[in-house]
Image (cartoon, rainbow over all chains, first blue to last red; front, side):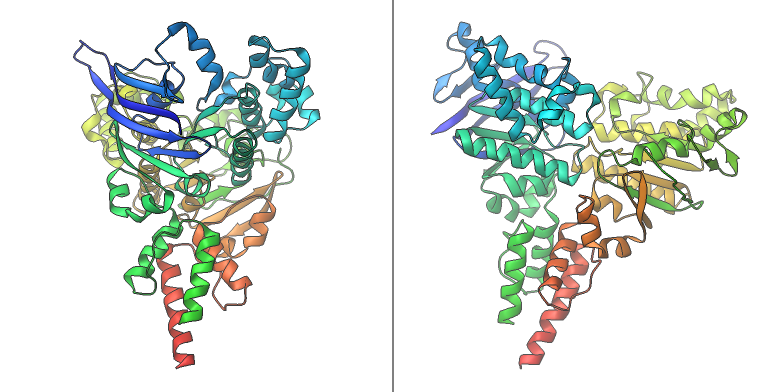
Length: 284
Length: 264
């Protein structure tokens, strides 16, 4: 089943003015349940517009957004419910931290949906665990934390809402490699524990290759490609056309294929690459 | 943040500074151009002590900085006015300002955008305007503090290309702070920091030969470097410090060829 489905969706900004621009142009795309979909595309390709449509922050100019098969705009009064089912993490979410302690900040969402104190406590503890925050950090002011910790605190605030679908706009941008791994690893764990569906927007081809089950490539407001990572990264020229890059390891295998040293180029992680090279050496 | 640090950046060099979040990279960058003053010890730019207030004006003129967020650095609504801001403040003549603005725009390949609105540019274009704004000051040195962190791959390539041009063609001293290993590889020298100290300093090949050291301070290496390192660990006699896909392909081709010959 598809957790989220976009049917012929268009979003036009500045309709009726000379600055009219279609941010999304009649796109249809599915996000299968319990999977991680990596959403990539150049700046201005419509990724963030798509993210804002997912939980009804933005209404499509035409077309339908379906959450588990139901149009989210069918009953406008239900929007609050939709927003607690679909979580949205903006770019640089640490700028949205505001409360006195990390714990209070993470509790803000669950409190607002009227959960019991006990349940809130439980959720805060679990959310903090997924994000790798310790008990000590929960008691501190979010403004005393390092950049990476702040980011994790902000994401924990959304996880505490226990969303079924979670859309994250560049959750790992600006973090060092270890910080990236902790956040993306924690999110994968959350997905596995609750059977959630994740949509991760990223500019890092390496991260997308490593963590996604599917990839959607956007280009100039349209869905340009979609498929499993190996299918996407096999089409190097098409990706370059969309102003995107390939993981470095895939570039190596394309070069090796050119030199007739290997057949496949659907290699995009270091672990798999190592196995492939060892096979090639053995068969030499 | 920093303790007992000693470092020299040569004139006309291209240096990348690596380190995980909170290791003191940005503090170092701010010290280099006198935005911050050291608690102990001293920093001198072209022989001038940054702690001496009389030098501040001259140091800032010689040493420019480009920051992470493209939206925080532009001051005017039209591209050429933004770039003219600094030379206007230096009290230069109109003709000279015009000349500097045009030259700076040409250097970052944005001449066609002189009359465009700054807020409508892409992230990569905004960063290039920020660079041009620094260039118009006529500096000897530009420090990039994670200037590509918020850009898409194309924007990142544009900025790295601009850095290389500034250094190789114009002889400018370039210092870049980054998390992207693929960018650090482009520099002539890499300084690795951890907990306020320099733990490695050398050419990209030297630095990326020390995969264990980098991993120990939670830094990554480029994917092909990692691959060659892992293969070497498994007993294949492959060289360390390979940074580019092309070089890795060359080495692997050579090695596989040798294996074939041996077995034949």
